[in-house]
Image (cartoon, rainbow, N blue to C red):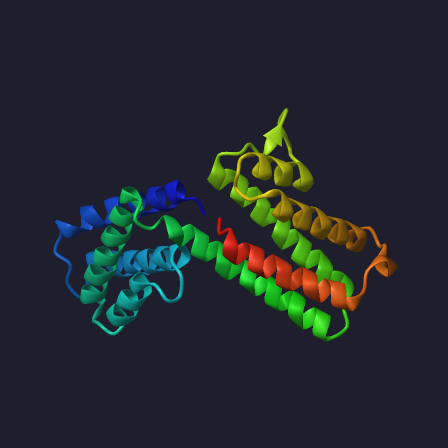
Length: 214
């Protein structure tokens, strides 16, 4: 999710919250029911937009032990803080961390498949994670990801990132080799690589994701 989308969602929810703040929110009233629903939506939005170890999540955990009315107020405070931080550009790394969490999950899946002897799907999953990350790097770096309305191929984006100075020629060559392995796996050329190469592929991509976050 882009930061602009995060801000837009929070703006919408906080606008609804502002409308409730001027009303008498008491247990058993329709306003209390609305506040509870809105607290749930705010908490869900904050959870979607942040990582498990963020201060925003910690604050939500503390708020979950409060009464419904207090919980609504606490969720509101966290949402306001996150909204302001996003607008100020202080949480630019939030998106990078969310991406990192997602890619880590896929690479762990690839590791598990490889450990069970399924080198081919492991290679495909790793290659897909790599291509998605390369595209995200392009977006982050202001490099176009389409030509004539059609998405660029991974190797083209890789070359463009090298030209833009995001990484050097050595890294570009590594990614080209990794993409070649992924393509072989995707097209059924399973004898062209072995389990050890897929293991190196996974570790190489994992290091690349950490070194060049998007």
